[in-house]
Length: 187
Image (cartoon, rainbow, N blue to C red; front, side, top):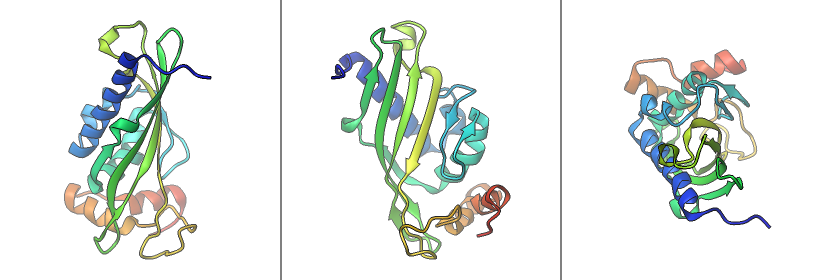
């Protein structure tokens, strides 16, 4: 049986999730950089693995955060496994958010995040969340207006509205172009 984490360690893991949630809500890419190691590895919506914080920002954060609202972790349901020396932790959190279909109608977009957090010594920066984080975030698949079968998933499901919202908000090409370039599929 795995021992429950020290309450102080769990509080620090929860604080990491809280800070990430605040950055997602504020669409604060630069601020979120402090939470992640430069050489992080992530799972993403558009690619199986993404290596490097800047690549994750380009491929994931910039395509999702601007068109997501109400992003919040269920703070009372954050879990952590902490190493006996308290220098390494695996944090697990479930989040709720709202995504948008092509016609702008909102849909529930829940998901989960698993992170590996480490620190060099206890008390460092007050938390085990020194920016040496590797993470994965997974959103549940939801049917889009164009592909009603929940099991049918392509890189572009539900993205036209994101592209439109991204272009309006940032004046840039959105995920539809990204998907085409990386998955070979047009929206």
